[in-house]
Image 1 (cartoon, rainbow, N blue to C red):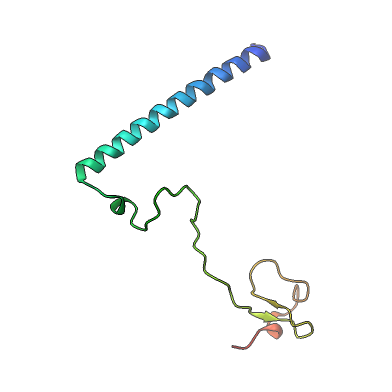
Image 2 (cartoon, one colour):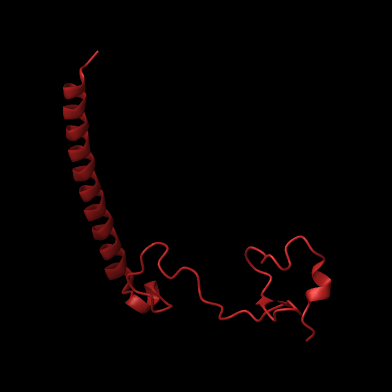
Length: 103
């Protein structure tokens, strides 16, 4: 069995190989994409129709829906709750119909 030092050296060598393989794969992918763009004479609007060029995974993926109007009101304190997220103490475990805000 290899000792800790040998394993750490192997890990370092593998990490370097992984980094180099990733760089090669990215370069190949970019070259392939550029070839397809040139072949079909595509523009950035063809590829990114929403105008979101260079978006990273997860960045801006969720569109803001704006502020949600309150659905429940505490008649004692006047506090409101939208019905989303954790219920406040004044309504938690109670029948919520009595706290509904009339439209």
